[in-house]
Image (cartoon, rainbow, N blue to C red; front, side, top):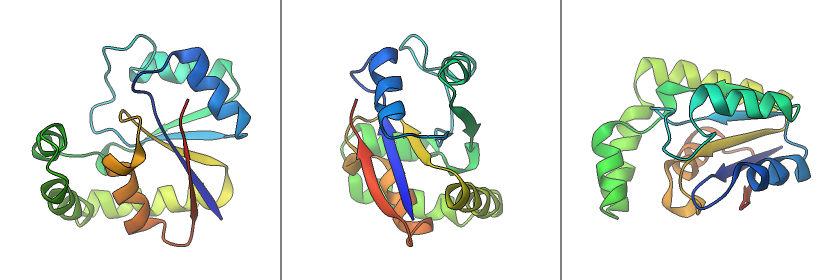
Length: 143
């Protein structure tokens, strides 16, 4: 099985959609705790509408997002602290339930994990994938 990841940092909506369509993605799994963005088209409602227009489904997994202190660690470039904070997030009951839903979705549909960071290696989506989707090969899309 394969799981894709994608970030929208430094990209446009057309390039973002083109990358998803080139990979034949069926569902975008938004793993941001706060699905808001200053980038036009990437906040939850607008993103869902843009994806629907492109024939791609949208699902938000709030419980799999990074808590505020984890986002602060990521902004500070403190990846070790982010890892520790995010590991704790994944132990919460709501995250466990959301993780099971995500795993079921990814087993059935071509799914891309979405967060902001362009490079997956600096983003919690890689930590999520390594913790919950260990039986999936990863493909990081860079629009």
